[in-house]
Image (cartoon, rainbow, N blue to C red; front, side):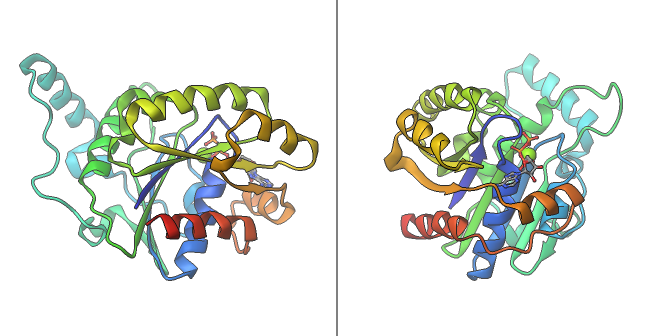
Length: 252
Ligand SMILES: Nc1ncnc2c1ncn2[C@@H]1O[C@H](COP(=O)(O)OP(=O)(O)OP(=O)(O)O)[C@@H](O)[C@H]1O
Ligand SMILES: [Mg+2]
């Protein structure tokens, strides 16, 4: 199964991706985490691995890809990325960092001033996710950049379901309505995880979000916050994350 994690800036997408990856890996799943956020330089630390080489480089790097994209605009022919379908094990070694049952790949980062936008990363993500076959013991978790640009690019197309992280803010409530209509248009099931939510804010959010679609509610966790601050590997068993994992297992 391929699950895309989305939500507003700072709501906890990367944190929940990393916690879910670790939980599912402990349960014996073969987890591929796709870091789809060109601005994130911390997710690999939370997973306890090195940042792998940009997957963009497999296709000659960003400049080459931009040229190929430009050429495809003028000819009207889509850029062809893959000749055959891939399983997780087919991803070339230099583009994955592995630990236990977790493999991390990063589509591409912004490295230099003035290097241009992240469009090639978005296009490549879409094709990569469509081209990866997840086996029955595999789970692919896609950590996205903040907001909804990836919906505009159709990155969701190759995913089976979407997990929106909602923090207790009005912006998250507004965005949940937008994401709900985008998910419907994409034909994808959308689930929610409430994050850093306790007490009264849970009551408010449960009125705004379809509560039969809420898979878990995570409180503020000091250990997670500390590890996040220090760039340390998460080493916590979070029962609420296990609830998400159990749901996904049953859905498979
Ligand atoms: N349940 C939690 N308890 C305590 N701290 C949390 C929790 N969830 C997230 N955090 C902290 O909140 C901050 C933002 O989390 P995170 O980076 O995962 O958000 P994000 O949605 O991925 O952000 P971005 O939009 O920048 O990608 C981090 O400092 C993280 O450690
Ligand atoms: Mg993030």
